[in-house]
Amino acid sequence: MEQAWWKEAVVYQIYPKSFLDSNGDGIGDLQGITSKLDYLKELGVDVIWLSPVYQSPNDDNGYDISDYCAILEEFGTMDDFDELLAAVHAHGMKLIMDLVVNHTSDEHAWFAESRKSKDNPYRDYYIWREGKESGPPNNWGSFFSGSAWQYDEPTGMYYLHLFSKKQPDLNWDNPNVREEVYSMMDWWCRKGIDGFRMDVISLISKRPGLPDGIVPSGAFYADCGCANGPHVHEYLQEMNRRVLSRYDLMTVGECAGVTIEEAKKYASLDGKELNMVFQFEHVGLDDDQYGKWTDRRVDLRALKRVLSSWQTELSKTAWNSLYFGNHDQPRSLSRFGNDDPKYRTVCAKMLATCLHMMQGTPYVYQGEELGMTNCPFGSIEDVRDIESRNAYREFTQKGICSEEEMMRLIRLRGRDNARTPMQWNAKEHAGFTEGTPWIMLNPNDEGFHAEAQRRDPDSVFSYYKRLIALRKKRDVIVYGSYELLEADHETLYVYTRSLGEERLLVICNFSEQKTAYTVPEAFRGGSVLIGNYKREQVPEEVCLKAYEALVIRRAG
Picture 1: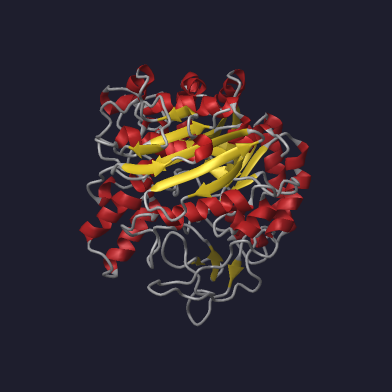
Picture 2: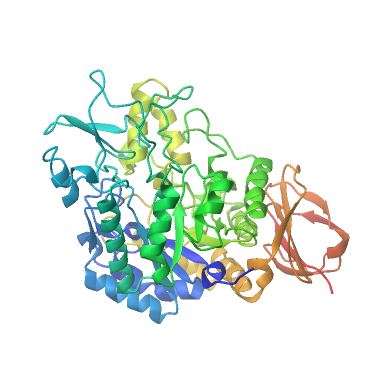
């Protein structure tokens, strides 16, 4: 397999608003990030993915952009950004930006012009339609609840917004829109950034005619069916020719609704589009008829089936991204593991082992390396996320859930779980700010803050350091083939990695119960490469402890 720096990298995602506040206003900022680069260097990560820092009204925490070439004042200035970029490079790391071009803010200059009149030159930058039977043009629903259409009084027409009504969708079928986007991307590349994470990029090409969709059972609106639209690959290949191929970049597309076959196009090793995609199949396993708002747990056998299919089917044609959590997901430890204080440390290490030993580029979401967990939000007043607040209103008003039940589900699945401030030390507000934090802190941070964990060789942080260092030393972890064992086992996730003569056996116990496992003959007498319990020998029959992870290197 052809080698590439972005295949060998480990990426760390920073959510700027919650990382570190340098000026006491309760909001994280660019100078705060710059001050913590030594911490990230110590962890061993190679790439920082910066969630949006552009000018924005902040309806969706920066994913509604009003100026792509300006910095949001609460985060600092463009000089602060330039200082951060230079410091990242001086630390031997790279920086990738969040590219949000399925939609803009309704306060972007393009949209301000577009809504003025039907014959405005910017009208066709967005998707406008006449209403139908005194209602919206079709039955599509927004991902943030309600209709995907907003009536606009000045021209008496509706505009499409797959997300918030303050996030109108761009019309990618208009070549002028694409030219504007490519020009903006080139501007950032010339600044010296190292790549892009592309927000909901699989949605940019809409279905011709924008027809009604099928309303799923229990839902109020239809799925828009925009994922992997008819021209998406054409547009991404054009983007690649015009911008991406001219620089040495890392690119990852957030691809809602992507299948393995589609991923082979987006992330083909021929380099015509992107380096890799974020797929959502494994983080949708606990959804039900109401989508994410459920208390279902992920079945391990289903998780193994999904992750293994992506591992094996992309192995020679495309490249995987590896993640359990990000800014849009609840905390991975609470969701896929056990955040009980008794198991918190060993379980966080086990999940990291399971993920980082696979083939693909691993993504660490801020705080994951500390074992941060979901947050016990008390009421809807504690919640800041537009998706959660809209769902709370819709589900309680329509009688699907009581207010208490909906808050319980938000504590399980809401996006704000990942957005509580980083836990830096034992000081007030966990060292995040000297002011009043913009969102509540998780109260269970005792001993799970960076200052304590950096001193403790047995901490989650120290374990992440070891995992990341191993990946840099052993090509088998990056480039080796993957094979699932024990597919039907209810609590063990077991797989091998192989490259040439080197073979690794990865065993992860997703249960608090002790579990016996017969080690395959080829690995008996092998050496322990890494594990979250101390083991010297590899017996024929190993009794795995609660949430134990064990990586064995074949003898000989």
